[in-house]
Length: 323
Image: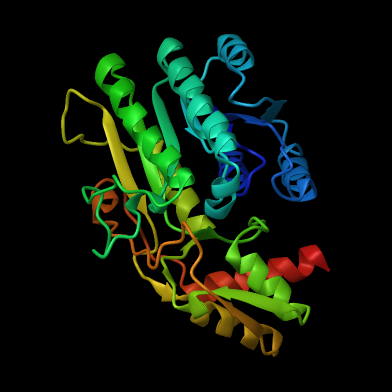
């Protein structure tokens, strides 16, 4: 099969490509390599992927409709995994247009090309942020998602609605994944885990929002990749058999307090965090917690990575990479 992974130099995209390259599939990757965060990290991920002769890379921004159309026309894809997106809740407050260009216009371009060039299956990343500041836990796919707290979350909710319409009208098979706080080696430096680690290891002040009274469903990257790989092989029974559309939660199904994460990092480095307590940030939700019973009906989810095991793997990578 020919598989396209958009956002291939990103955190999740890199790991998905890396796993696929151990199979007999031909892997195509595109990325705009923007400078939202340290471009060195993106280029290092990409360099590792380019070591494989089965990996074909093109620098393309999914918001460029002409280039995307030509790329799909030139290459025949069986499966498309769309992981290209402008990430970050707080960044979306000051830069909403960036999210429109990448997450909405760009996603439309992917949808259109998948439909026009007869792609068998489009799998795309949504987010747990679509649940807003829900008080109902664990979150289920049929819970209310009409009150996003950030434009980032709104753009991802829009992806789901757009996908439903394409599945309904054109019978394009689409699967959205509401990802819950994915972390692991080669993780983004704008994520809390990197910031906590960098501050504690280097004896810097650590900004802790809401006094650390947040809860997150942390999902280790390998567990996410396994789900994506299995979805490319599994047959999904749709709630409406005439509309090949589905959305699934992908999480660890266990919520952890942020202060616990800090404690694990402190123990690893045998250092005490220098904490600067700040108020709750606009756009932040208090808690995330995934119900994964829906996706578990279609793919076997074996033992998930525990928070202690996952963070220690991340910290081991962090020390090796940044030192």
